[in-house]
Image (cartoon, rainbow over all chains, first blue to last red; front, side, top):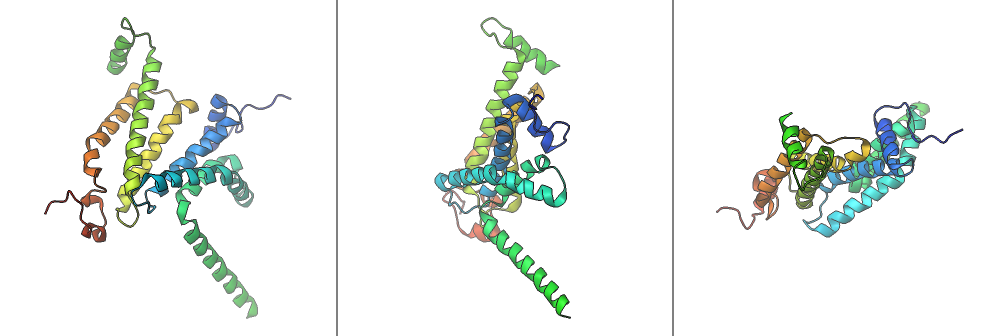
Length: 131
Length: 124
């Protein structure tokens, strides 16, 4: 059986973009370039919010850090979301990469908010069970 | 199209042996790189504490679009004279307004509390 050259045959949206990139750059480099670009765009947006003091060093470090982070974690995030909502992971990976970049340095406060919401939900459930 | 004819006439002139696609490709990538660089230079100076949200969002999305434009030929996009014209005029606008950003974010784009911190070039 021949190896597929596209990772997203027959898909739409992000999957089609990854399929096109795979066609032009190869099945390994194509998706990686697409994810890196999505992460870079997200990191660029969060760089505008970051307090870098107008200096290039911290700004470029911010870009590099969150673009690399998007490349590393977006696959796992897309796979986890795919299991939860039933949409193929290839359709979610670019969105996950962009989201990781956009969240950027605010992951700590967003994580704290999410943990607070989860705690409140658990508290409400345990109160409901006690009644 | 007029744009195609003009570029084709130049590209096929003696001494220039480029196809129309090559000319558009080089112009597209060059303008997109200029646009991305200008947005990077401005985004370095902005922060959520000092700059208005819509300005940060506009600069971020413009820089993101420029980054996507740079790699778009790898995704099967063939640049046209219209995309080159748009990118070129946007890059020219960024270059023309760059001197307002030399000493940081212009006063009109700063948040009210950040306006209290005066810049060297602010008028008395």
